[in-house]
Image (cartoon, rainbow, N blue to C red; front, top):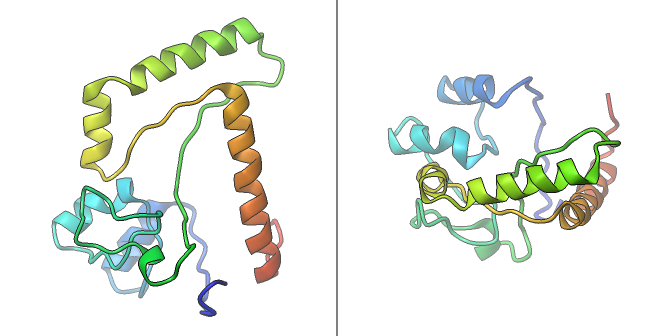
Length: 150
């Protein structure tokens, strides 16, 4: 949308099969997560063209960020933890505390960094705000592209 590029979206059930097809030449380009593709880039099976985050990755600093040639472009993949709606707040607080503690462990941070990722943790309320902002960003893109939920 920002670059005015028209690309054909090819849906896959998972990133693994899409990466296999990219390596095999069935796809020409793919927006892949760092954690799924880093070892393939390091082995030479894939060539990283650009980072979609706001800046270059310390894991492969030679690869430019899209923002360097298309200012304002930023797409990050992330993972979060959730619980059923009526889970007691004491349980939510306990889980959040344990997850945050775990994500601060140096061996966890090092593993994510090796895969080109990073860790961050927040409170359940802050995570809810983050989710709302992310949904709004993607909703704008989906509407622009004319996409509809399946």
